[in-house]
Image 1: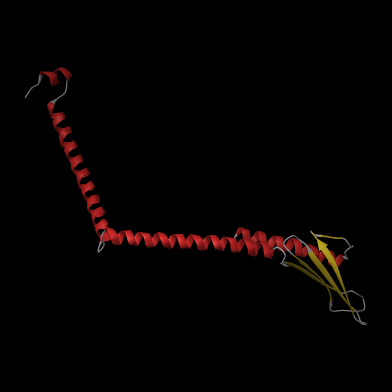
Image 2 (image 1 turned 180 degrees about the horizontal axis):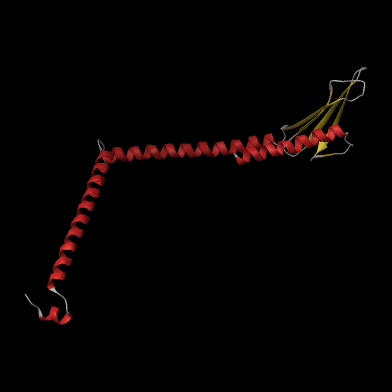
Length: 177
C-alpha cells in the first residue's frame, strides 16, 4: 500500500501503524486506571450512603454542624476564661529569690535570709530576717518594677536579682521546649 501523500512527505506507513498501536496501548492503560479509580470512588460512596437516604444524611450533617457550633462556643468561652486567669495571675507572686547568710559574725549556720517575692511586673517585696543571739529582726522593703525606694543590703539585692533573672531564665527554657 503506497500513498502519494506519505511518499511525498517521506513517511513510511509502518511508522504510522506502530504509532497507532502504541497510542491504543496507552489509552487502554489510562482507561483501566480511570475505571479502577471510579470503582474505588463508587465503593466509598456506597459505604458512606449505606443505610441512609437523603433525609437521614441531612439530619446527620445538621447534628455534626450543631456539635461544631457548640464546640466553637466552648472554645470562645475558654479563651475568655484564659484571658481573665492571665490578668489575675499578673498580680500573683510567681518569682522568688532567696539568699541565706550569716548576719553577725558570732552566729553560724546561715540562719538569716533575704526573700524576694515578685509578680509578673517585678513588683512585690523583699523580706530580710536577721537572726542573732538576742532575737530575730525582720524587715520588709517594697519593690516596684524591679526597683526599691529604700537602699537594699547586699543579700537583699542578690535575692532580688535571683527573683528577676533566674525566673526569666526558667521562662526562656520553657519557651524553647
